[in-house]
Length: 111
Length: 112
Image (cartoon, rainbow over all chains, first blue to last red; front, side, top):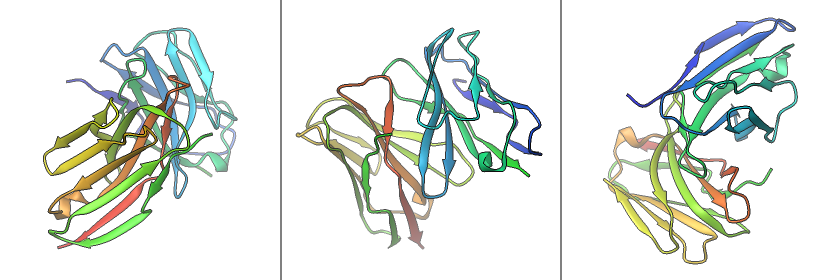
């Protein structure tokens, strides 16, 4: 089944404790992206990747890192999480300029 | 970043009613996409539009790519309770194919 998977689905952590949210897709898509969703603010792009080893900042990249060592994986790293990063996170993938397919989301709470 | 103007922001309707929502931009778009997000889930693609004037249906849903290439419309006919969710428009700007631009969503509630 074609899909985007994310792990974990739920995460509660404390300020400053590094964490990684994984994302994997099995559709051979070149493009992958991370979004955060907050009430009233819609979907805001954090980082995106056009292909392996090619990443770029989205609209809200501060406090996040990404890497794209393999085509199928695009992990999101929070080196020192803060409470303002409490949010619902989505990974998405697509062919270039194509329809994006989303993972199920990761709900992160930073206390 | 750039955002699309999506309206209405929310709708509360009776089961069986038709629904219309739209999305506008100040610049020309090459592609329009309509998504639905249910509580606790990721957005799911409903309809994709690639040509000005294109009219595409998916069951009770119909979407159109405006002829000016600056707007798109989504209609839902004979709404049912499972239509509840947030509907998002998104699109690729003619000048930048790297970034999908999003609207803020239309929240739909259906009263049985």
